[in-house]
Amino acid sequence: MPPFVASMFGAVSQGILWGIMALGVYITFKILDFADMTVDGSFALGGCSCAILISGGMNPLLALAISVLAGMAAGAITGLLHTKLNIPGILAGILMQLALYSINLRVLGGPNKPLARADKTIMTFISDIFGFAKKFRDMASTWTSLIAGLVFIVAVIAALYWFFGTEIGSSIRATGNNARMSRAQGINTDNMKLLALMISNGLVALSGGLVMQQQRFGDVSMGIGTIVIGLASIIIGEVFFSQRYSFWVQLLGVVIGSVIYRLIIAVVLQLGMKTQDMKLFSAIIVAFALSLPVLKKKFKRGKQNA
Image (tube, rainbow, N blue to C red):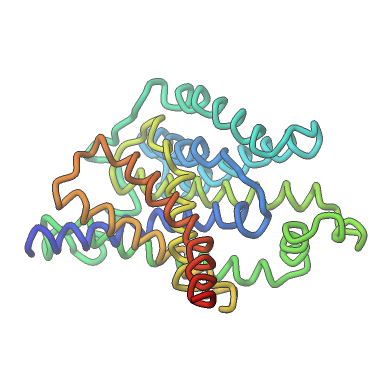
């Protein structure tokens, strides 16, 4: 396979794995209308806890489940800081993000933790079942990541679509739309915020655990810039799938936005951009994506006035 095509294929598999994280950000940013900065720390928490558990001999699926619970616990603390201590949401997230850096160092016992060759992961399990190591050799990792990502993304979207159609899920959506009106209808908005933050950070940690198993090492800094990537994925997805579409299509749009974001990054790297400039480029993408609705309105007004 030509290097450029292989790079694009790898970007798609990475985009799907990171798309789970973007779905977590979508819950807080779009549904709850809560700017949660915890995700930078909870993504790394998912990866770090999963790495240390797998290296200790635990089943990778069980390690992933525990990582999700750890992420939910982080989200719960952010929610308690905001709802019970009245700390502004963005500040509560920043405080938890800072705390998680030290917690992740404690979990790993150092800045990073590589997996040994003998350590089994979900990726190696899939590779063994389908025989990817023999069939694709250099592309085996990409194929296993793609299969694992598709399985988990379908399960997550189906679960979210069902959950947000329930009474509790509808209450979370109502809280995000209008908290005062929700309280007037008897909804405990504090509990809804707490639950939404737990689900969001659980999904972010799930993504972190899967990405760790794909790259086979955990690092305390692996979550830096996660919120930026999540926002970029959401906004890019909205360009193709606006709110007039059904809820499950919007969720799928977030994942597609994550894939497109990764493809853009892969193309830019292939064109010769240095990796040290990627954070700047990511910030520019997000700034442009966030300004698209305003630019569209100005463009329409200009046409009408012409």
